Each structure stands twice: as structure tokens, then as C-alpha cells.
Amino acid sequence: MSGNSLLKGVTNARSIQNLALIGFMGTGKSSVGRLVADLLHFTYLDTDRVVEARASKSIAEIFQQEGEPAFRAYEQRIVQELTHRRKTVISTGGGLPIQEENLASLKTHALVVGLWASPETIFERVRGHDHRPLLNEADPLAKIRSLLAIREPYYRQADVLVNTEWRSVRDVAVQVIHQFHIAQAAHK
Ligand code: S3P
Image (cartoon, rainbow, N blue to C red):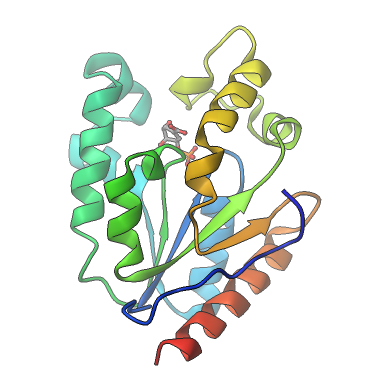
């Protein structure tokens, strides 16, 4: 993926009240999202944390005890509850936009920004962290490559794609905010 960002056509029917970040694990959704929320004076919400609060257990425990489909059902319910939110930066779990109705729902109220990084960069960022059940594999880099290849078409459906490769969290956050202001001005 080349270039730092690309603002695609956001139809006039859209209402841009919120900002949603999608992208693979380790692309910086949480760190960028928290900073963007701070700078915009928006509320910050992370769907992974809401799922954990709802289930009263960690994501690893949900995967282990209830299975991935149960986790995806929690995600879907939470996305449906976000439609009346205002002034919220929403960080999403890496697999959330794979259910197309989740992405469609986010687009009704939020500018959807996709954060991108190469498999090698993602691997460097997530290695040593053991809270992501999908990467508890003998060869996590191979798993990142194969999952990213499957998911890329979904991440590309974001309104804006932002490359996070070799860039600071602040640099990415400033670019995300810039894109948000452009989109909001276009849909007043
Ligand atoms: C997942 C990503 C994780 C979390 C869960 C599944 C995925 O979130 O939702 O472990 O399917 O890519 P992060 O992208 O915030 O790590």
C-alpha cells in the first residue's frame, strides 16, 4: 500500500459524528485513538475493552472458554450499540471489520480510518505480548502474513487509509485528525 492516506468518496448521506479506527493488530489503533481523542476532546472507546467488561473476562479467556464465534457476537452487539454515539473515537479489534455489517454500521455515524503496517512491522510491535490469542502460534509472523492477506480487502474499505510505517503515534494522530476535519467540513 503506497502513500500516507487516501480520502475516498464519502457519500452525502453520511453523518460524521465519530471517528472509528480499523486495522490489523499492532497498527496502533489504541495508542493513536487515545491521542486523537485527547486532542479532539472526544470520548475514547475501545471495543476490545467493552467486550471484556461485558463478558467479565479477558479476550484470551473468551476465546478459550466460549470460542471465537462468541467473541465475534460480542463485537457485533457492541457495534450496534454505537450508532447513537457522538464525539467518540472508537478503536476496534483487528477482526471486527471482517463482518461486513460492522463496517456498514460504523459508516453510518463515523469516519472510518484504516491504519496500515507491513507484516514485519506488526510482528516487531506485537512480539513479546501474549494477550492476543490469534497470534499464540509457533510462527506468529507467518500467521500475521496469512491473516493480513485475507483481511486486506476489508481494511481497504475504510474511508481513509493511513500508513503507520516508520511514523510516530503523534504524526499519525495529526494526520487522522486532519482527515476527520476534511470529512466533517464536506458533510456539514
Ligand atoms: C483480533 C484482534 C484483537 C482482539 C482479538 C482478535 C483479531 O484486537 O480483538 O484478539 O481478530 O485481529 P487488537 O487489534 O486491538 O489487538
